[in-house]
Structures are given as C-alpha cells and as structure tokens.
Length: 464
Image (cartoon, rainbow, N blue to C red; front, side, top):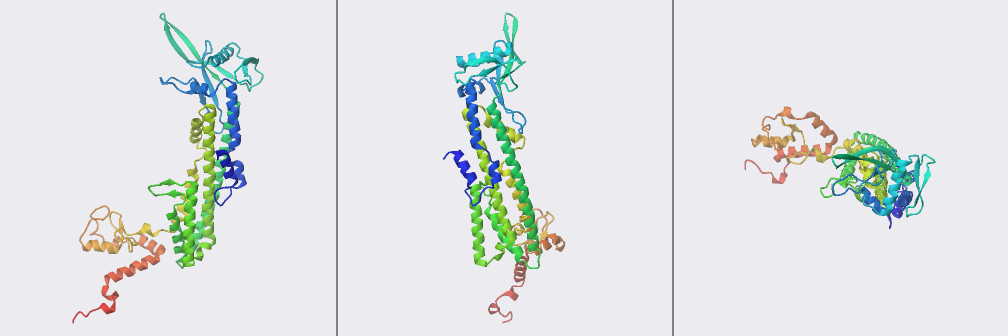
C-alpha cells in the first residue's frame, strides 16, 4: 500500500479505538496536494532545462572541494520560507563556471547570462517544450521567471605575460513558483499542527490538576483505603511504562503502537485486580478521568507521529523528483526555529506533569526501603554521612562493632544515638505507609522478645 493512501486511511479511521477530531484532520499535512506541487515543480525545472541529471551535476560539490555551481537555500525564517536557486556565472560570457553539461544546456544558460548582461530590463520566458527552446520578451511584471544579481561576488585571478586578468563572477537567481507554493503550504500546515498540539497539551495539564486534587481528597481521609487503592493502581502504571521505557533493551520513547499495547496490558491487570478484590474504586470518577487522560495523550502522540512521517516522506519525494536538497534544508530550518516540536516534546511535558502532580502525591514503597533489610525504614536513623537505615539494622551494626556505613564506608555508625532519628521522615512514613509501619513494628517487637511471641507448646521451663 502506498504511503499516501495509508496516510489518508489512518486520518479517516485510526488503528486504535479512537478517531481523530475533524479539526485535527483538517489541519493535517495535505500530502496529496504537496505531491501535486512536486510534480508541477519537476515540470517547471524541465522547462527551464534543468533535468535531474543537470541539477545533480550543478549542485554536487566535486572531489577537489570547489564551491557549488548551483546553490539552493530556503531563507533564514521558517515562518516565511523563500526558496532561492542561484547559478554561478562568469560576467564575461555568462557561462556557468566549470560546468560540465550538455551542449544544449550550455547554450541555454549562455543565452541567459548574455541577455541579462546586455538587457537588464528583459527576462527570459521558457516555452512549455521540454527541449528548452526559448525566446526573449520584455519584463511585464514583478513575477518574472528569471532575475539576475549583477554585482560581482568574487574574482578569479589568472596570470598571463606578467599581467593579471580578473574574471568577475555573478549569480543568476532563478525563482521557482511551484517551489515557493510547496514550502509555504508545508510550513503553514506544520505551524497549525504545532499550535494545535500546544493547545491540547494545555488542556491535558488542566485535567492533571483536577485529578491531583481528587487524589489529595481521597488520600487525606481517616481511612487508608483510598491511599492504598491509588498506590496499587499507580504502581501498575509505572510497571506498564506506557509512553517511556526504562529497560535497557528498549530504552526511550515508545511508538504509538507499542504504547497502545502497554496500555492494554495495564487495563488487563486492573480488571484482574478488580475481579479478585472487588475493587469498586476503579470505577470512580477520578480513576476514569485518569484513563481518559492517557488515551488522549496517546491519540495526540499518534497524530503527531503520522504527520511527522508525512513530512519526511514528502521531502524525500521532493528530493527524488527535483534533485533539490530540501530534505536537508527544511528540517534544519524548522529545528533552528524550534518549529514543529518532535513527537517527544509534548509527551515529555505531559508525562512530567503526570509524574510530578499525580505520582508524586502517592509515594511508592520501593523508594523508602532500608538498603540492609529491604523493608520499610522504621524509625529512620540518618547517619552523619546522610544515609538512612532503619533503627534495628543500625543497632545490629553497632552490636557487631562495625563503624563503617554500608554505602559509603564512612566511620559514622558507632556514634549514632537517639538524636540521629529523622523525626520528619518518620512522620512522613507513618502518614503514607501506616500498614507497613505497623507490620515492621510488630516484627521488631517479636525479634526483641522471642519468648513472648513464641508458640506456648514450644516453651520450656528454665529451671527443670
């Protein structure tokens, strides 16, 4: 299937269970219209005597590193792209400098140079014949097909009989109508897409703020059920890694298709939890808003990704049909202007907002474990080196007369006492991990009084 058909089919009916809004489809890159512009430009260049072979030989730099005979640029401003095709000529006879071209093309270009030097108020109108037959006509409007810059750009000295003959070099600028139409259309559509996505990102950030307010309300009550429900769901969300992967094998941003697969896995895990524990919490309003937020982010990323592909494909076709290096010039131009942010820019911004405003409200247990016993840091002791360990592990180190910190090996363990307990961290853990703190407290009491917590049948008299 050709890309153009695939692109239109994706816009009209997405691969995933959502459709793109009509406003998005209307602002998408017009791949078919741009393709027609490329065809018009190819014909326009052939009429001027520039076929693909001719343009390639003029634009390519030779092995000696000489300057290009034909330069092509799009201008410094991405919001008003102005393609410029300029040919380097000798002022004396109007022949391209060191151009190894066919005789027909040389004669045609020589006419351009000579007539430009002798009659600056005239311009050359090409015929529609691809054999490059030409005629001279007076300039009738500002939209002339060919214009010249007569100011010398460089001089080439050539020694002969102890005298120097100077050859003035000038450029012949060749405006291309279809070229300008192509880039004005493409730049305008890319700007509209970028503006649309910025607006969608702002909407999603508002939704994130609303969800975070709901989480604060659910987790600040007297019951800890809401806190643990959100923690279990968000822990699964982190494991899913829907939009970004932290694994070594596939580290980085996920493509929309892969992100959709991870989202399906996340939904399946939640349904399994709901079926096993009757977790009605998953059907609550804030949770459903969280699911919808992720779907909207995925849809936005998918829209950006297919438009980015359309841009790359049409620029590749532009290069292939015309031999003009637009695929190199245009992406560099829009990157320099921070124009058409890549598919990762918005996802990173929204995912950062999710991490800071939603995931940060519900701490994950793995971030608050003692690195010796790998359970929660009960009564956390902050050593002089700033490392945290639970009080039971710190006491075991002191009883073994081990003064070295297990992490940095600083000699700080033996001087730690009750003053080294981090009270603010202790209150934080008691607030967000009440069940784990209670379980660790019982475990420490059982270890300190084994006779009290041992099975009565196993108790023996210490006398007989």
